Structure formats: C-alpha cells, structure tokens
Image 1 (cartoon, rainbow, N blue to C red):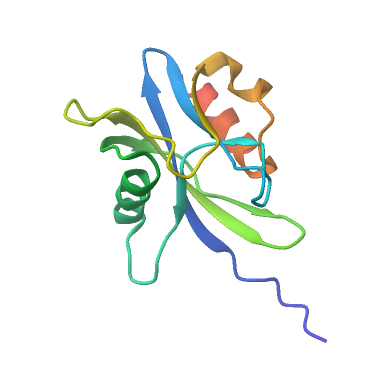
Image 2 (cartoon, rainbow, N blue to C red):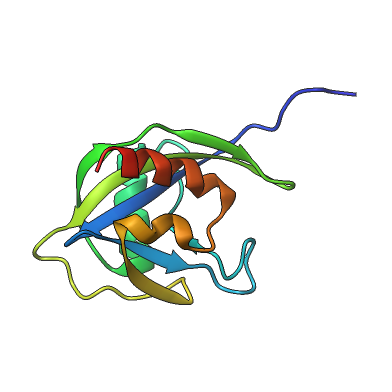
Amino acid sequence: MSSLAPVPIAVVCALIERDGHVLMAQRPAHKHLGGKWEFPGGKVEPGETAEAALHRELDEELGCSVEIIRTLQPHTHAYATVTVRLLPFVTRLLPASGELQAREHAALRWVPARELAELDLPEADRPIIAEYLAGC
C-alpha cells in the first residue's frame, strides 16, 4: 500500500473585478460540483505557465481578455475524488474585451465582493475569498 497523496491538479482561477463586484460562474449541473458558483478558469496544460493558462481559459470559457492586477496565495484542496491546487489571480476586463459569454457555465453573475462568501461555493474557493476580502 502506498501512502502517497495524489498529485494536485493545477487550476487557475480569475477574480474578475468590476465596480466593486466580482464575476462568478455557475457550474453546469452535469459536472463535478454542479450548480455551485465558482471563479472562472481551468486546468493548466503541460508546459503552460499559469498566466498563459488563465488567458486561454478565460478566452475559451467567456470570450474575454483580462489584465492581471495581482496574484493571491495558491491553495490546495482535496475533494473525495480529486485534489486541486488553485492559482488565483485578481483581474479586470480589458477595455477591448467583448461581451461576456457563458460558453461552459450555466450562468454568469456579478456579485458584490462583500457577498461572495454567501454563495453556494466549492470548498476550495472559500480560503481564496477570505484572502481576497482581507485585502479589499
């Protein structure tokens, strides 16, 4: 028997800010953690930097371009079937970015920053929100 922990999957996520609000995306019902609200983003591909993954994922999921304002501390969380290492970035939409499109999510919603913790969120996102709010 091996007692080695599973290797975490590197996942980037964006806290996209606009007028005191943060964009949240609702996971489709048929996916892991379906129905929960999350920060948009996704897996870092082999050989890809976290920043490149963030830009690629946001273009794929939302059809948008962002400017990275700052990074938050990475956070690792073990779910029953997978361990993720979230790499969070605080961002804002670039002026030339188009209208947001929910290409891979059930819904998109701009949430006042102070209300983020009230959403039905994946457990991995909660420490990120706490750090984000502490810096606001």
